[in-house]
Length: 111
Image (cartoon, rainbow, N blue to C red):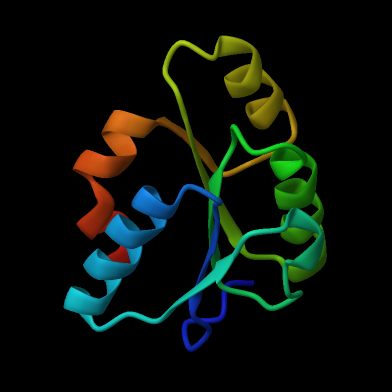
């Protein structure tokens, strides 16, 4: 079950994208914990935003969801259909094209 008091976890190595997400979260007054290594995801509930183009991200996100019981929202290039299919098959809650994730970032973080 998602823990509303837990910070949002962001599994991403792209510094530009990390900056965009953390700035949006800061503006909304929401805590974000950045994790760069999929093996280092803390086992706490809450929400996980994950860059699915990162090696090992799908497996780590699915394992986190199973262990922590939180919500996982993945983002990926819209042309990377193999990754999209694998993420959906792994049971991630939402898999969004990177452009849609960016366009709805305030709602995702605030919601």
